[in-house]
Image (tube, rainbow, N blue to C red; front, side, top):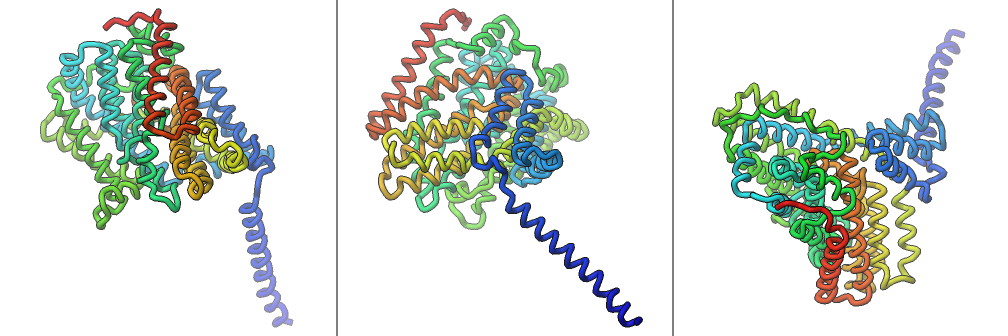
Length: 541
């Protein structure tokens, strides 16, 4: 009897354990195999559309993004309360904040915010502003200088947005350039410049999505066909020179000429860096050396992650680089160099340098919050199969609309990037489909279609309130995010419309010597028409 009892004492726990293990495995398999009812349907695009529409209507971005996330989680869980809550946090916020790439970007943001605070406290920004005040005499000069600096910093769009903003903001403020206009100039020289620069994190990303082809070579060949990027730069420069604005931007610029560079009551960065704290003995080198060290260290950090110091060539290392890790490492060493510089020059003590780190963090909190919500919203659309829905639509129409396909791909890339807020995600979805559809049949059309995909992705990213680059541009200019989106949107739509017409022409002509000049002439004609219609905005030189 005792032996029987001992046997059952052993058998019962083992049986319960096996049953529990089997149930856990079954639950895990069910969870892995779970597919929401709305997967890969048009409903997958509803959450970002809701967030974008609400942001534009309410002028409040945090609640709008969260409602979009909530809608996505409801769709995913089939309107289950428990499933919705779990998906928002476990499948959304916690998931995106656990992603190493995202964390690297947040670390870069915090360090860059700290460096901006350091440069302001050391008096470097004020000294540069005084120097620029002697050499940059006009509003046009201030705007063109911003564009030039944006073009020169072509390594990465995040780095571009925050660096150009911190350097040029005091100068544009002095010449009464609205914060909305500064944000547009920053945004228009971030992604559009990076996407036509062979040595950039964007070139590396695009090259990685082209399987079975020479990625970097195709990227270079696609540059003259990248109409949105090229035409955005031409439109921006020509409108600055011609002193013409329209739409909401015209209102902001008119008010800026009267001394109000914000226009609206929403000015979240107004007290980010109180005036009067800068060291009056600061010099221009207190700005230039940190910026140069940051650029050099970030480039070294990126090629390090790509294997440059393990024997790879510079181009190969840049193509294989991890922008998130490279920027985080590079900015860290840039911060160390800056602290050492200021201590050696005795413009800031070690204690004051360390005090700038949490202050810089606080200045970046709005951007970090919006980025986190934007990444979470993208996670919602990914879980609902938005990418598969768009990919299936392209494959279904690839054969019958061959000559129109570049223009169609441009529109699809615009919409997908606008809805998801990511250019790189759009590249990853569309470029492999384009290569598969054209690589064996028509190489020249494949290059045009790839450029259309890249151009459309940048355009949608440019327009989207939930785009990380758009968020960074707002942070760099210290402009209210919704103000930036609403003022930039009409400008981006104009460039997109001319680009669409250009891709229609390119699909039939397929000659870059003809198509590129025609597209530039069309863009300039549109700018002159805008000037003729909206000439009531009087700007002083």
